[in-house]
Amino acid sequence: MAKTLFLGDEAVAQAALDAGLSGVYAYPGTPSTEITEFIQNSKQGREGQVHSIWAGNEKTAMESAIGMSYAGKRAMVCMKHVGLNVAADPFMNSSITGANGGLVVVVADDPSMHSSQDEQDSRFFGKFALIPFYEPSNQQEAYDITYAAFEYSEKYHTPVLIRLTTRLSHSRAGVERKEARPQNPLHIEENPKQFILLPANARVHYRTLLGKQEAFENESLNSPFNKYIDGADKKMGIIASGIAYNYLMENFENHQCPYPVLKISQYPLPSKLIAKMVDECETVLVAEEGYPFIEEQVRGILNRTGNIIGRLSGALPRDGELNPNLIAKALGLPDTYGMPVPELVVPRPPALCVGCPHIDSYLAINEAMAEHGKGKVFADIGCYTLGALPPYNAIYTTVDMGASITMAKGAADAGLRPVLAVIGDSTFTHSGMTSLLDCVYENTPVTVMILDNSTTGMTGGQDSHALGVLGEICKGLGVKEEHIHRITPLKKDHEANVELIKKELAYEGVSVIIPTRECIQTLSRRMKKQQAAKKANS
Image (cartoon, rainbow, N blue to C red; front, side):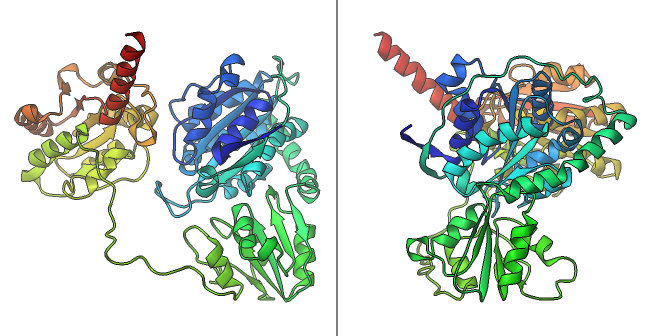
């Protein structure tokens, strides 16, 4: 087939469709969002009736994908790295249940924290779960690996993890597709105990998983995605994984590296190839995006030889993304990073959009909280996190999805008064509902503001699961109806909104205020579509 220009995310999505995907389950999170969006917009996906509706959070997405695998169909679940924390319970247990239909978990890590709270490396989750996992080095490999991962999953009846990183997810290259295969028929696993993790069953399944480890390593040893490329100069050997392999090769004309190179894109680590390099080379540089995952294993606890260098030794930075220049410096090649950015280019921090409804909400919060001092507003993950920056300086915490309400509860339990939690409508349905339930159970004096802009704004405007029903959800969780309020965050309503917030802050119990106004970006896109439709019909 002719090559098609794909983002790394799109290459994964197209490969899944071509591999006979029946369902993708995901919660939007940069840099993974485009995988599911591509499938949603794909003619191939629509014609195949591939399930692609967003899930409420990553845990529910993972569990739904396990359910589709249980039914014999091929399923993929997608998330960003911190989303795997949310999905960790079903993810870890899926390694014990195993898979029936192919089950592929795609996680997009974010080194340098372009839009994330941390740099965590999802390869540790793959090792923790004792399952095979991949790390593509380019877009073609992202496609080929995804296509192969479903076969691997069904061959060994195991979930398979694919780890992407930001630069691969969001850069484009030509990709050659394979022939599309049909979706699996429905087929329930014949072993009635496979998905019942009673301890007696789980112990048997765990021993089965342990028994597969040698086969997993042999697959890595013989994988087309792992290569030992010999070099004449044995003073240095280089282990390069995933996209770091590309960064390495960019330093050499025609990609001809004089040193032996072990390219790794499939795990568990091929120990025989690593031993070969360590035995042959005086020093081994480990180049990997993320944590020193490979380096730690190759060094071992003692590292008596001292000839393994990388992020742990200081040859490469311990944090942030790699790039070709950093690897060049580690190899003793010239520093070609270029001139520093001149001071006349002033950094411009992100800001809430002009016309954003959250602006009026934060102005009301600041005025209502002014008499109570600083440090009593707890916030969450979303575009409204920008309320921490000037000119608002309105919030004081942002830790993880849903933490605003429970952190406010903990502070109230400690005696802090008053406390206010700020959370978005999508984040609330993701992981804030159980937090509110904890508050209701104890009637904790917490005021919760659910900023309802009718969308998942930070990741491109996906539909919110709470659209039009936030008040009903809060009432169903037990919040008293007289303490559930909808307000309109507009300047003309500012004084009334401030007075309402002050009133609920004084209430010694759970109250919910829902500022409701559509995201300015989704409103703009919706109006443009309506205008285009009018023109087309006129």
